[in-house]
Image 1: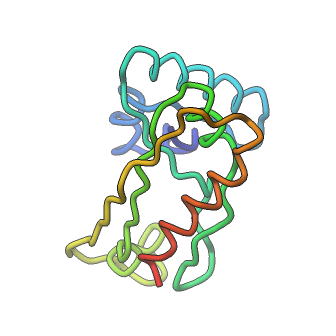
Image 2: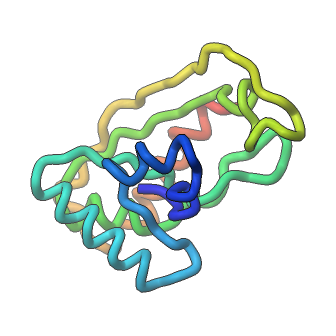
Length: 142
């Protein structure tokens, strides 16, 4: 799932159109449709990657932004585990489009956390789940 502006990228657009779910972040209808499609894909057994902060921070170096509720509500509704992932240093290799700070080849350090079971959780647990995942991911970024 990603922002629909990626559809206009000459390289990423081809890849994005084939496997990703686009969402216009300015439209609640678009977000609803994207999450409905995401739910359908999950029911078919497909995996889903969501960046829950919903945007890239303009601060350099970046800080993890506040998470949106949608991904956590979806996991609870579909009763599927979450696998939080911390990508610790990609911003050092490619910041934004590379025009201001440049980009370079390199190795990204990725930490895959233990899955978090959502069985037995309700919509009332969304904020607690969101905060738990935020703390896990952020713990590896510091």
